[in-house]
Image 1 (cartoon, rainbow, N blue to C red):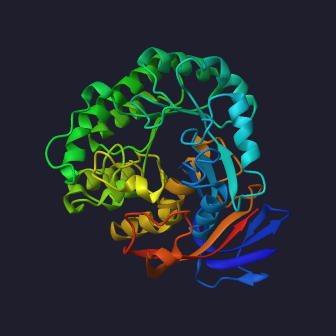
Image 2: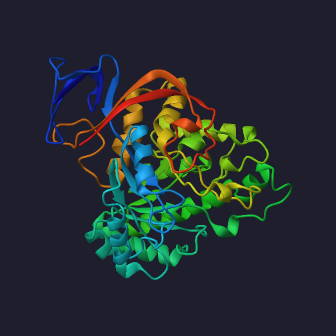
Length: 411
């Protein structure tokens, strides 16, 4: 099959081209010429790789599941997800649990699915066998995760895991907040500020300092998940200056929302670390522009709607966003002068590199034929009828976004 467009995003830039696909693989990228499917001026781009998704199956499939999550991914132009090890039961912290999840996803997935393993106290001996069994790397927390099955690690346990993983090159993904810097909530618990003040940026910044030291000492590949504090950009710059295997991601909600505009009682905006100020948001965009933040992924963390009820302290902390990763990021990016090539770098190439998926993330001969065809100029309004997530609780309801997905090709 040959597909063409006047805007094909390749590693060489965005240009008219014809893409030849054979047996699920990109066989060639050729000059604009004859094709079986002509997409006109629509953008042909590599499918997004979302390396931070909480699917929750098995065990909490009523929160989300592989069938609904991957359908939502496809609707949003995401052709590969990497599922996080917590919120499922059992948590993916052993070979047996990894195999349980591998069985659970069979026959349910509309897109490619890969799995992260987890680091918890006492499971260091499981890490290398889990890599051999298919885990792409490992996730851990430095604060309580919110679920009992996935306890957080201390610095000693973090370093033990890092030393074990360092020779393999497998990444250690870390939720970077330190418990000793968290504060007791004060004031009206229905006011977003009560949540924001309880999770100060200092907790995140000091955790990233700790991770930087661990990376420097062990040589392990360490990755900061869902960076919200722009105060840590200087630390990322220092890591880059030293040539350390250290990276960070941010998410659509930190780039789209700001604390000043979160209404009282709207707990669908609650996540950890929290959405911070407008000024902080703009500094995160500057961090992307400077190349200090490597990737943007959804951190899709859904739950039962009733768990989002109540006040900002009691409600579940997580935002459902998998389907809207591309349009949310593109809407913010286009207004700040970024290009389609930037989107591919942040949302396709870098997540594929983090998860060690060498055949994903770019339109390159020999890579898997994972492609999204979309219109960056068209706008739409997020309403419940569009949403393919299992539940429709999301802070993006009512948002007007640029970027309409027309078609996806997955291998």
